[in-house]
Image (cartoon, rainbow, N blue to C red; front, side, top):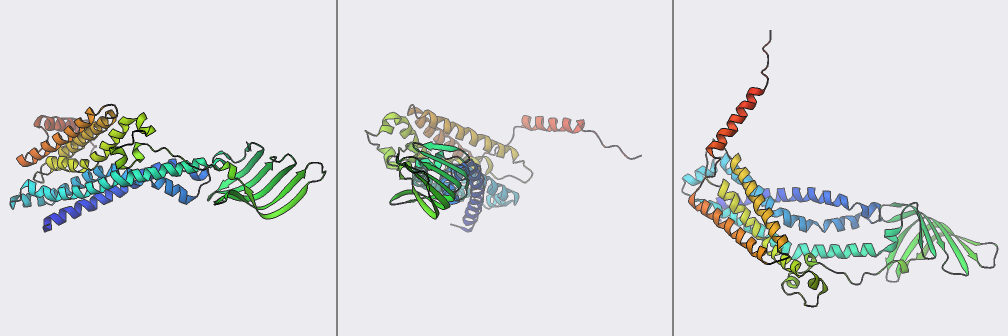
Length: 389
């Protein structure tokens, strides 16, 4: 690459990374706050909370990347125009297609990133998230115990005073009547669920145990510093997890098993998901072509670029919303999927034609005159400041 290509690619990719990290971080925080119940309500640790919510980051990055690249390209084009670099490059004989090359290089790099996310990382993270959520949901004790409430599990009665970070339970009471020959009551200051190869145990700390045996008047009391209460029967093992089309590998979408119950139930979703993953790397290139076709032509510093930026935003919104609509309709029929391919091809061809012809997108004269007249009327309606005296 030449020096100008390296400069434009570096500027565009740096802006892209900044926008991508910022937008992904903001949206991830809003989504993570919805899962705060993992720590407060279910007593999971901070690491589990961060792990479960962090698995959504590849999906967010895949969706945000085309928009982040569009913002980066608009920023770079504006910067080149503000510094009059676009006019200088055009005056030196650089054609619009030659100036487009570094932006296409940046778009192809982003497309490779989006392809890796859509084909591998996003479905893998969603599959891991589904498995993790199933394992958390299978722990009956973690999900049904509520602080301050008596909970009956057959012949067992549990009560906890509260939960603390890290899965620590405080103020534990257990009434065990599973053995008809005896009744056991346990009080403990704190405890935590621990799992190993032998099963699940509630490790109680600093408490006492009262055993009421049938036929005996006085109970037997034992104070303990640590006591393991077996909970294996209340901790279910996750055996079969049903994965949807979004959690499947690309090969499973291309050639699904005929006897797959999910495929038999929703075959259209497999087709729509497959093409969505193929569409994902195409959108960055299409957005770059749209942005360059509308904003890439050389302009003087006196020419207003606000209308061109508004046209970029409007065009991208229409294309992306139409793409979502075609993808949704593609579940019922394959025709909308082919229409989406045709739409992207038509938009790209029109953008390339606009670039080759050197067409400058500007606001119509009547629209400019109307906007100026409205602004003039608004300015006349403002009260004029009174002169002193």
